[in-house]
Length: 117
Image 1 (tube, rainbow, N blue to C red):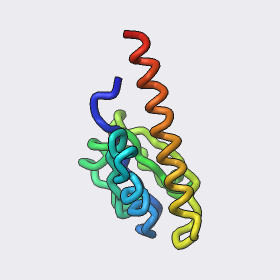
Image 2 (cartoon, rainbow, N blue to C red; image 1 turned 135 degrees about the vertical axis):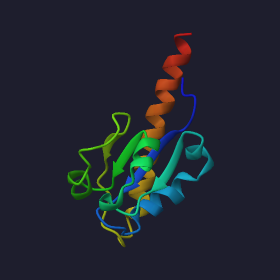
Image 3 (tube, rainbow, N blue to C red; image 1 turned 30 degrees about the vertical axis):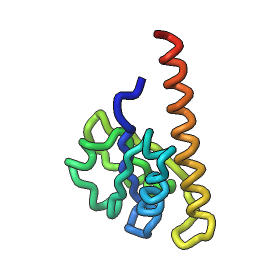
């Protein structure tokens, strides 16, 4: 059973706005119940305290995933998404779908945990 929302630190290689889009979409009540999202300015500007806070560092594309820091807390894992380029009209829909998929998986695991009690 989940005791708190999962903490996602979202980053692109540079601050192109996609991380903020993810944060804004995650504020929807059905998602915010399961996720707490912070945007990072860039993969180049990750702070140790942010990595220590995060359960997952979400790279918004494969280029950002390649810049995943080698030195990080063991509790911070990488999640790769493939969002469209910044400014694309499809960014919001793709980000929302990724968030909903993540929460859907968490809901399923939560139900399984409840059945085991």
